[in-house]
Length: 452
Image (cartoon, rainbow, N blue to C red):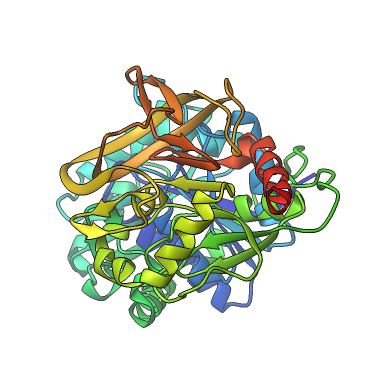
């Protein structure tokens, strides 16, 4: 049984202040000495970085589309083990999910799967009495979603607060917090959302501290904790990356990190380690060599377009990556990793492993995808079906090599990515917890590589 007190922080729409409130709550409760488990609904990589900074624990994603509904509670249980409280930040509006698929992957669905009370964050900046109608509509839309209270965000004054409270007195839902407009809790954004923690360093620390202070000052933490404790026990067994590791020496799998490559799910490294790999992180912006004994390479997503000159200037590492890839070593590259392996990015030389050029685009490519592996690679056998997510403002030309990585089946049919030698490179972000065999397969290929 999993009996962790928990809250889901949701909102009627995006840009209502979910990240500020959720991160602030995490920081405020952590400051009380509680072990707080941070979670994020959906595929987003950036918000969990702020959650991790607030709590000192890995920010983890709960994505019912990529991982399936059956894995949501087990992944939650895995991440929250031993914690005093779990805070789950929602995605978009409370009832918004995968396009055209009902409640799938919505915050509401995840709240129901976790049997967790919902706290609705309302941007009250342009309303007074209407807030009651808004809250009533969200609370009554799905009787299986239990909204336990409201936090009013961006409140202008004492009089504004009084008007809002009077209106909500009739709703039957308590006001659990009131947060005034505060520029200092804002976090800068750009083309793919918030600027990641790794790029802001001390500024991010200051922002999270400010969020915690504002939430602590404006919210009833005792009432919120009491609400969290009303969540019933879950019967789900915690997910675990525990399967028999590949026998033999532990191959070194180098995983790209640093400011340019911040997109990673914590479970990927856990799965690689459980499969028998020694996982070593390196920074392509600073390190001129791959980790000693590297037998495989994982380059995830991030913002290489923001660091193209610096990545290009690190010629020793680019050569090392190219030599490793051309030698046939297993390389798994997603999105930013795909661009780093290309011949150039916005005119700046990259690794040149792939005969392709990348550039920034005005068009945002965003959404869930269904995919099937076109051919065998160290990551997936031909015919392997996976669900994933695309999230980028770049274009790669050509989009696919002679041997593509994936055949896409949603929203349109196309092939995408590259498989050559040991390289599997694609724009598609995947969550390996849904298909743990890919981590084991990758480690098996890494172990076999030195003998080639």
